[in-house]
Image 1 (cartoon, one colour):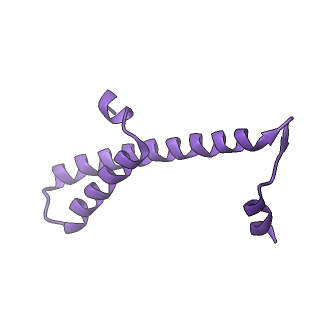
Image 2 (tube, helix red, strand yellow):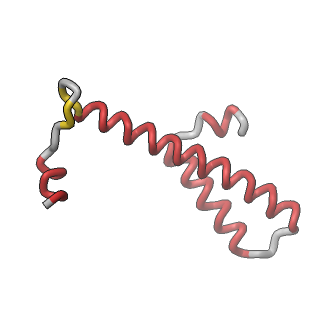
Amino acid sequence: MTKKEENLSFEQALQQLEQLVNELEQGDLPLETSLEKFEQAVKLSRLSQTQLQNAEQKVATLLEKNGEQVLTEQQGEARE
């Protein structure tokens, strides 16, 4: 993955991933081009997943208070 790809925001990576998927789904690309686009899509998918996991961890950390999970009103409703 290039430095440029590593610096993409989650939204930018997702947008590029969607574009690649659309191109691959058309099925009119040569095999080598399809493989290159698939490889790029996998890298973007992994980048997006990592960014999402980091965001989830940050949210969990922000919701902790004194080492204990603090439930917000919405979380409590979701568990009922």
